[in-house]
Image 1: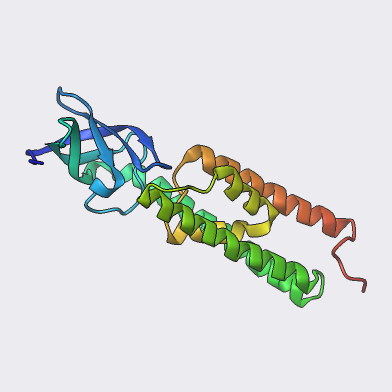
Image 2: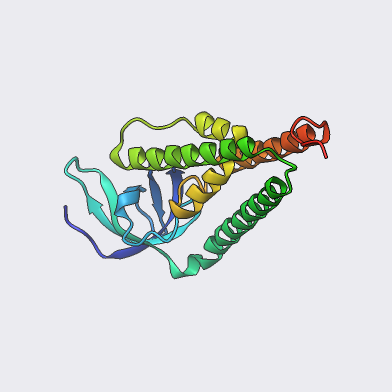
Length: 203
């Protein structure tokens, strides 16, 4: 596989679950296949619209593809919102954990419920780790609906931690929208149960 000179292009299609997509060259030419492993540096996951610098190559099958891909320095603006969202996610999760711990300490929430949240969070983190490892190997993946269900049941703090540490499922807009919807539903149900006296201990 012979590499050509450096060129600029834009990510025109990207499937984050499968870890590949296509680059549309800035100059005239065919679009090129690109895999996540073709990125030399991975400060974050690619998204549609990212400007990149790459080397055009030709695979054994004769098809065009990109190699030694890096994000363009002109693409900093697209990375900043993602960083800001990650920080906000971390702050929201940390705030929930602190408030939940205080509620347990004040005996407003039973300890077994805290253990359930902890166990589900650990399990959900493992599912994210397994899904990312499977994506790299091209093997069996965990369904997004399964990840969302575990988050809804109470494992979402572990999901947020996995998104921060593993950089998995942290960019795909559709999934994140559904994810935060399940987080909101979980917190609302928790508050509703508390308000109805189902989990509050008698004073």
